[in-house]
Image 1 (tube, rainbow, N blue to C red):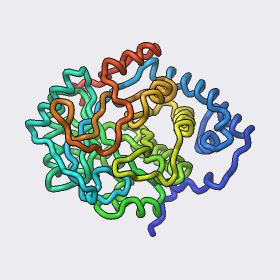
Image 2 (image 1 turned 90 degrees about the vertical axis):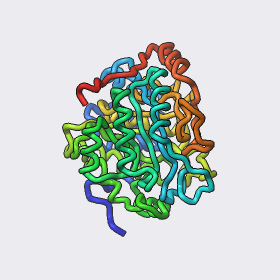
Image 3 (image 1 turned 180 degrees about the vertical axis):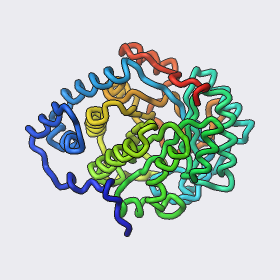
Image 4 (image 1 turned 60 degrees about the horizontal axis):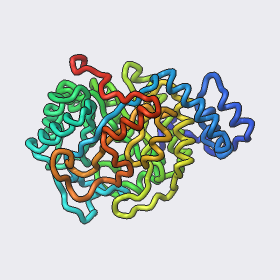
Length: 365
């Protein structure tokens, strides 16, 4: 099996143990680095969650103010040739497949626009004849007429294709590696184009080189040893900050809970552990936007707002469509925070946080 590139392999910190004092020293580090992150992710740091939260909050307010950026996902298609063991859209799932027509896309866009949202994430499964590049390109063109910021979470593409998307109004790409552990990656991605770990690993670099402005990275917490995946994720971010320094990055923390199809996480991550992870990343990546989706419960998202994450999805549907018309019956995963935009924004304001619908003008795409 092909090895990870040397810049990505987190082996130096995997077998290390950290004392309570070393975790405390990491919390007060003036220039946090990879060793700092390893210490703050360690069991010893679990006793420091309150001071970690306080430092994470101070850093978040310093770099992003008392704001929370809002976005909404729109699933375009549930067709997929992939064999991802954890995904509700995997090709062996006995579920009816759906794809929005362009007329239906317009209906969904109009409904989302009425909700006041200005940042849209378009999603599909892996590349299929039903939802191929031309389909995604047309959907981006339609969305860019209505929304100031349009991003995609679809299948990996060539540099030429990403360039065409950028010209059509797409500003960013989200491409989770899911897990950086080669053996686990092979086990979880049983067949299909996504089974190529390294082709996916190179996608953010390819997309940013082609002209997209922002790449969203993440690892699906629960698939593999979280320490390995999180340290590899950190190294991936640092690599892109050096090689794509003109571009922006975001980091998300999707966590396997009760997945569609009954998939059970081999390495479950608790809410307390997730909070520790978010605080540690905020301390070690002070100016990188951190994202939290509606996978998490309303109570957890309320508690985390302003503490480390400064960007959240709202009013999300993981079914194909569902905003302007009835969506498909089954989604990619379960949504655990079903609040509408008005209710969610009221919560943010009660916490003296300002919901931000737009911080990007389409004129400057």
